[in-house]
Image (cartoon, rainbow, N blue to C red; front, side, top):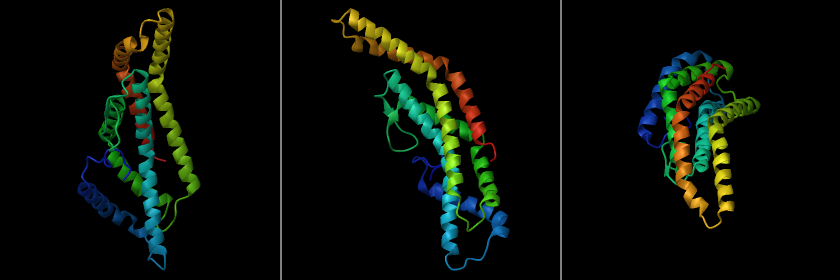
Length: 223
């Protein structure tokens, strides 16, 4: 439901269902010693607790992708390319640069064996949160805040060159518009702003991948 890549609308629901069944069959023998015979509402409590725990594990990685989509949309707005929309993770349109950044992040997640990490972390969670135990809301909130803070820092690092570029280039064309009022500075500046932004994106792509891979590595550190 929430894991990047696997939760995409482009992955058929039947495939996701089969994957969930396979994972359940694989980890069932590992957690069977911890299982207790359901009594009264214990079975319902167990189902609700397992759903909340699984959503928490998937949401941690999802926050990173959402942050990249947000900053990708901001970067596209800075360089005047926000009108070119597309979508890969969900049905909502987003600017092309945001789409490129989120697709790159999902690809890096898969290359860095994120599905294996997800299964291992799922098995490890049973030693922290036993069956029929509701997850601690405070711990969930702290994990979400820490992950969101790290994702915001990564997004700010990636978008910093574009923020500086947008301030400088818009100030230049703003001064030009004041000096030559007859010149439609906005329409004149659009192609130059977009071209300069794409050149900067090309130059910082290597650093973008390094920062993103480092963030993914930190995300996959066992907690």
